[in-house]
Length: 285
Image: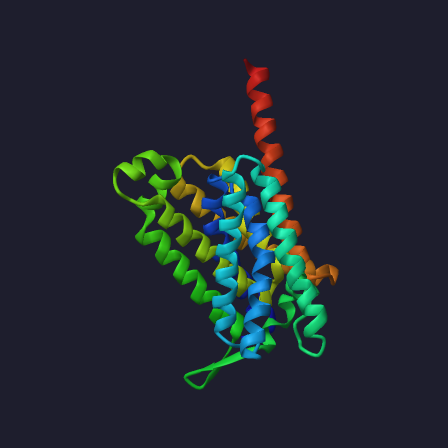
């Protein structure tokens, strides 16, 4: 398999995995929480590294996931206090936890390959060179991890689709039916945290946020129901990954940055298209 095809497949897997979860975050008005989680899980990675002294240890994912859940908990505690608005709470928690991570990295990991810039920006162009041997075949680690997290997210959504849907649109009904919406809320946040960690080393936090929020927000404008929104969100992620890759190759620029730009362009095209359609209807009436 060529490097170009590998990069595109990895981008597609990560984009779909993120955009599926992004739908539920957008519907619950929790898009900005994605930004907080994608940055604060770095603290969990750093602390886990101090314990294991290995960058490939599974404990890094565990630590990052726990930090992501801790971020959600802190934000909710501050928001529920009614003394701080949710957006301010997100900003406070993000800045504190991420700053601690940056300080620890710069102070204690100077000789270790744990680069802040790489975490934020990522470089998917190098993904084909990091391989994992499975049944005697060398496969890009990004493909393996991306496929694994996509399968987990798909299983979660497929198995608990009805429960998640009711919990999002009618929390009171969910409680009446004994569905425990808080449990599904934290399960969703756990998957967001794990997906963030998996995306870190491959595409970076910046593109991960774009994948999580951009396609879902765009799909929201053109969808009539939840299932359609999930499909459209996934398709937008796939299309953005393919176009973004080829645009990056043509212009000789960052692949991650190019994909993020394409996501933004598609969003604005849909936005202006919807407004133009509304304007035409008004003129006809």
